[in-house]
Length: 105
Image (cartoon, rainbow, N blue to C red; front, side):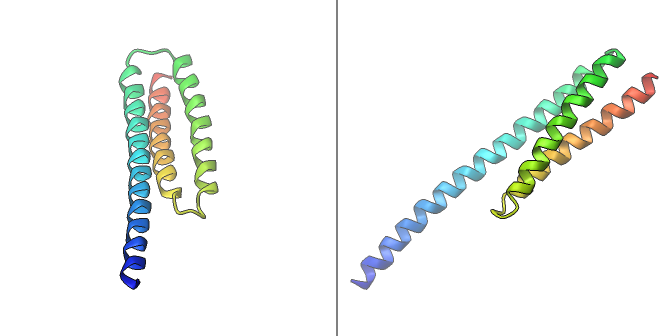
């Protein structure tokens, strides 16, 4: 009887582990997609006017604050690190665009 409980607990823990691994994979895919989109913005920025840079910076700031808010909400569950990584990548892109905008001026 005791072995059956142990096996049932193992299977329960195994299924929970599989679910957690899938969630982690999905979140990592989300990070990769966000970073790809940020790199695409950098490549797209060649020969763009000042207004284009201003719009992208404003859009990215909004996105950055959304991810910071998600990170603050997820601190209790331990998933905040993923959202802060995305927010950090967005912030790096904003800094890069700001630098390019200043060079245009």
